[in-house]
Image (cartoon, rainbow, N blue to C red; front, side):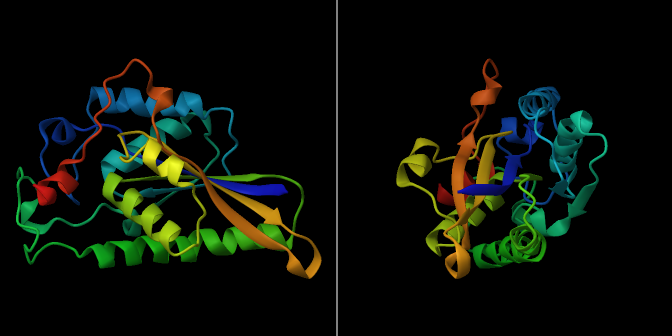
Length: 228
């Protein structure tokens, strides 16, 4: 089984709004000092990885996280994409929960999933497919920085539909997506001849083990506000 690519998906580092449990949505809050430290620790953990492509939400907390990580990879061009933004929380942005889940200005969960999956089909699927069509024995690595709810929604949808394989044990081990946590999808060539296909397997999910010694938040104010 030959690994042809790995997708590294990282949630942005902590912001003051995270710490204060303020609903962020697509409001453009900034990393706090701890958030920058978390991004730097993530960059240190990934500095030996050669990234071939890098994508980020255009919101500054995500793009700044990516920029800090890519300080170890100065030749990698960072693509900012609105499709990787957090769920739009409408009138709830800048407030604290509990909140009304029927607030009409909220982006629907389906719409958020559609834009994340649409981005994946537009950017990742053709690239990985091209590697399978023209194998050279090298593993390509892709960096993505985004937001907690979008990452969680994306992975759960892709796993539920069978696009990504993932064990129940891995999902149970990290039910949340902490700030600066890492999720990894591995793409491998499976089978041979006309039966050969690309296998897509989640090998890490919500992993914050590289942040040892920092106080990592395990909650998400945006998600929790609508559950209260």
